[in-house]
Length: 222
Image 1 (tube, rainbow, N blue to C red):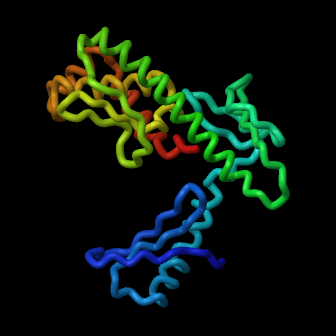
Image 2: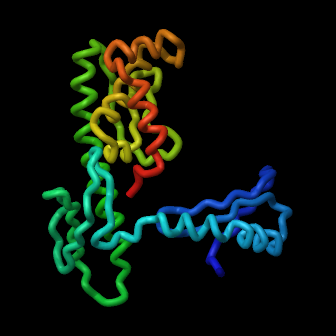
């Protein structure tokens, strides 16, 4: 099978890596001296993996399932509608105001879902942070939402909390674990035994929640 892909050459890279974005763009990141013929060979060798990954990506069509606060919601696109995204009766309803033939509705739906998800994440996380600040008697300085891939949350030395907005797809008890984890860094700027004991005071089953997140993190995507 032929794939459209972009070659990205980097001078200090030793190995080749294939990355597929959420909008199906394939990038092959390779050392600077690798010829195009070798890149084509890598693509052929990884063709089964690429096909499998592409099938797993969302197409943003009615009937697809999207996780939200621990529930699986069914996407329902309302064409010729500009209504805001809403959750109703197990459905994730998205208005699509452009009915023209040939228009890429998937990108518009994806964009609207991301905007909705970020708004919900800020609302939910701000509320959960405020709740646990009272319980833990700890005060953060700010709560920020970002599209970060490598971590679910972070806390800097000034008590500024930053969360990956995609955590809003997880169950609330998992969101609470992430919140308590980051708030605990205000008291303990490490992952020492005292840090984990601090988390356990407020979430005794934090290991179960942490394991759920590790096992399901790849499913938390729109």
